[in-house]
Image 1 (cartoon, helix red, strand yellow):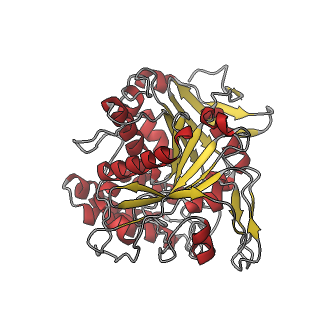
Image 2: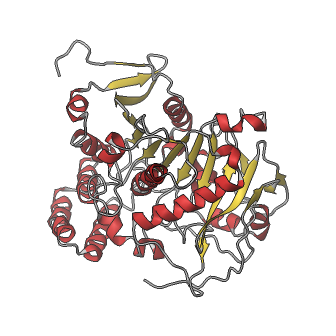
Length: 463
């Protein structure tokens, strides 16, 4: 777990983005169609990078506070949320042509809401800090959420018009750890009342990583069911898997993490290097050199108010960010959480409230059905067995087919009280990539409390 030296010598803050390169050769520029800001939110000695885009429907700056504000977080650990911006649901997408051309995204999540993308935590993307000339990486969700909360507050201090926006924390994958922790931090800091309130309303997580022991087991079973493992290979991996619960119970986090990675890598190898994030392909589409080449361009850094000597980086379950979150990686955060900081799922559903202290937070968990890493069965198991105030009601729910028109299936939905679960068919781990139109409609329906037109496929059957 080494430390990387930082060459940064100054904190540049958050400022307007007037234009940015439209390709890797910097032969043309893009002028944002909406008000956009980028730079660093301050959290002690740490600097978290964000890139903000106003809603495309926000014409009058005085009305900016009336629009919902979405935070988007990629996971990893160590992934940059700029990947989510330019590859998934941002206003602009990077193409795979040799020039890495940036084009407008017709299904951008900022069509109706403001969206801000954060490199979280330090060591992801552009985010950096200074501690005696070395990086300091977070070791827990308690530390991570505190760091993020302070950086978010610094953004609102600079741009107070957005402070009253209804806030939803969204993201995917390892966001299953980050997002509940950050949401809980905001709720608990609001309750203290010694800092300006943040108008938190809810959270939405795609393909969440929450229960590593159980989700690793389902990962192997899905590989067997899809034919990426035969009987002998499956038995071989399951014999190894039996050690995983024991390692976790004994607090042997390094052993548990490395066994988890070994099982994942052997499953992928048996499938001929199948993409664990989308079983239809052999290309995960998560980390590309074009993205790194783009964000390390000096012209891009200048446009985004980033010091030229700041190196942009992205990792997925590797690198120093992951090294320092090994225990967190293998901990069940559905229930188990740091005793000094409660961020479990039942807490968020039953106890956490918005800034008024009254209305419960709204929670959405959605899953692409072709993801073998953090798949449907894991999310289904977590919610079906969740100990919360509506546990009995949830188990009695009849899942409906979300379809509009009737013959066009968009997903499968269950909703009870403040919890909604959606399965997106024909989608891998990155739902906004696999089903961009559906993902946009889903998040807008959730945020704006719109109806999901749906029907019960077994309306006349006893379940």
